[in-house]
Image 1 (cartoon, each protein chain N blue to C red):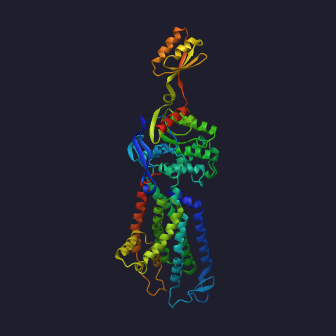
Image 2: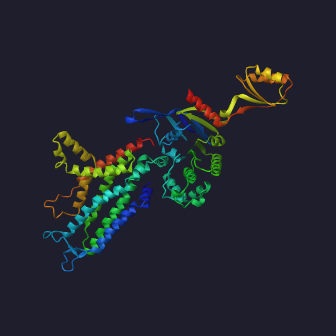
Image 3: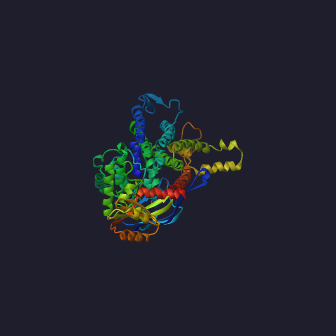
Length: 274
Length: 311
C-alpha cells in the first residue's frame, strides 16, 4: 500500500509537477548565485548584490537561507497538502475500500501505509529541494551550511504532523475538497493560536476561553511554531533585534498531538462500516 | 465440513439526522455452507445480500450474532488470507495495467512479487485477458473489468470465493466462460458464494440457494427443492380420457387440467394421488409416466418475494 500510494501520486503527476517546480528553483539558484568579483564577501544573484542594505557584520548567507526557507516552506507544505489531500478520501471510495478491506491487512496497517506513502512523496521533494540548495551554496559559495540541511528534517516532521489533520478530516468527511479547505483553515488557526496571547486572548477576557484556546493549541500539531523553529535551526535572523532561540518543544508537543490524531484516525477508521 | 456458518447474524444501521433512524439491513441470518459447494444468495435490491458478504469479510461490523468462515472467527487475518472477493462495484486504479493490478492485490494478500508475476499471467489467460496484460485498466470496458476482478479474487488461490454479481456487464459468451471457470473451480474444491440477480445463472450453477428478503432468510434449499411444486403432478396416460371420466375426476377435491393424454392435477394432499390412479386404471387407462411439476427459479422467487411483501 505504501509503494502503491507513492506510485499513485507519481503517476497522477502531482509529485512530478512539484519536482519540476523545485528543479526550476534549483536551476535559478545554480545559475544565478555567486560571489561578487570585486568583493568576495558579497553574495550576488544574477550579478546583483544581495544584502547590500544589511548592517555591517551581518551574516548574509544565514540571512539569505533564512529568507529562502521562510518564504518557501509554508507554501511547499500547503501545496503538498493540496496535492495529496485526496489520497485518503480516494481510498474510501465505494468499490475501492471494499477491495482493500477484504485483504489480510488490519485497518491500522492500511491507513498508516496510505498516510506514510502520501507524506513520503512530499518528503522526497522537500529533501530534494533542500539538498539541492545546500549543494549549490556549498559548491558555488563554498558554504556547507549544516544548519540549513538539518532544517529539512524539521520541515518533513512538521509536514507529517500537519498531515494527521488532513487524515482525520479526510476519514470523517470522505471529501478531498473539504480536507484541503480545512487544512488551509488549520494552518491559519495554527498561526492564530501561536500568537493567541497577543491576539485571540484579547477578543474575550475569560479564563475558560483562554484555557480552551490553550487546549486546542496543545492538542493539535503546532505547525506555525514548528516551521518557525525549523527556520531558527539555520541561524539567528539578523534583521530581528532579539530573535528567539531554537527549541524542540513545539516538535515534542506536536509529537503527542499528532500521535493522538493518528490514533483517533485509526480508531475511527476501525469502527466504520463501508 | 462447513466452509461458512452464521448464527443470528444481524446488522442495523443508523441513518438520518442525528442518526435516529434505525435501518435493519440483516435480521438474525443463520446460514450454513458446505465446503466445495456453490451457494447462491438471492434477493431483491436492498435485501441485504451485499451487507451479508461485507460482514463476513469485516468490511462492515455486525450488530449481533456470530459467524465462522473456514473455521475462523470474523476479522481474523487467516480468514481473509483464504478468501477471495469480487465486490459488486469494484474500482481498480486506472493508472495500473492489468498485470500490475494483479501483482498489487497479490502483494496486499502477502504474496511475493516474484511468484505473482507468473501467476498473474496464468490468471489473465484464465479470464481471457491475456492480450491485455500490459494495457492500463482505465481503457477497459465493464466486462473486461469484471474479468479482471475475477482474476483479482483468485490471486491468492482462495478456498472460499465471494462473488457479487460476477457476470454484470459481461457479454453472453463471457458469461458462459465465467460459468465454466466457476464450475472448474468448484471441481477443484473451491467453495463459491454467489450473489446475483441473474436467476437463470444461479439455477445453472448453484447447488443450494438462500432467498433473502428485507434482511431475513425466507427460504433455503437446493434448486430442485425450491422449484419443485410438491402437490402438482403431470400424469402421462396411455389413452385419452372420456368425457364421463373427466366429469367424475372433476367432482373430486383436486383440480385438474387435461390435454390429450396429459393430465395435470393439483392435490390438497398427497394421498389423493392414489385415488386418481385407481380411478384411471379402473376405466382401463394405463399410467405411462408421472412427474412432479417444476417451476422456474425466477417464477418461484417472484411469487415468494411478492407473497412476503404482501404479508
